[in-house]
Length: 223
Image (tube, rainbow, N blue to C red; front, side, top):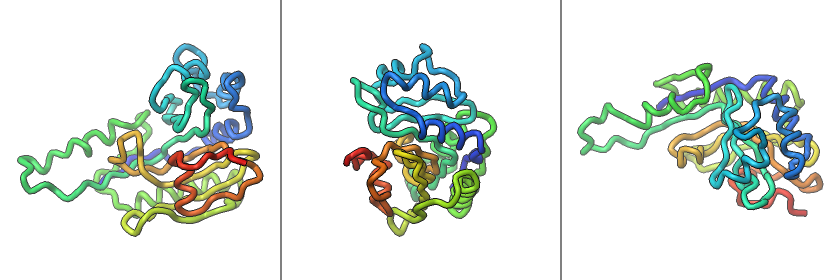
């Protein structure tokens, strides 16, 4: 079991809050991105970049990889979410008795190489409790800046019960949640800060319904 993490900073929360409070229309995306203080994407235009990338676009912004899942502008589709992972947790499957070299775990070796900066910390013998502590630390930073969360809860099964907290920011949700890391095809689990487009008149989903929203299984702007 292993963990890489980079503690959420107030600067990251302010950048994500800037995204939450700005327009995500195609013609406004470049100005919206500029308000975050993050570097411009390749070619200088995030709207053009999102339209050119066929899979989930990922932009490195200092210590963070900013992903734009579930419709990032490809073929004119609207942006639905930005997310930034701040912890990745690896719990290997039971060792294969036929493995000639059980000590050589390439997935473990790759974990510290998957981070966007050298400021990320690596703990090769981390526990699930430490993964939970990384989420808790992120939750506390966001709470200090945005106030109490409107929803705090859990999702997932008994084997991997994950935690989440949600704040409403206008017509967006700010969510700190644990879950699968789809960028590694669910090889790792992650804790991430998400900003999700969401109807201001809808009740905030809870439990597994919230996780379905993060996985793209719910139209976040449905009336």
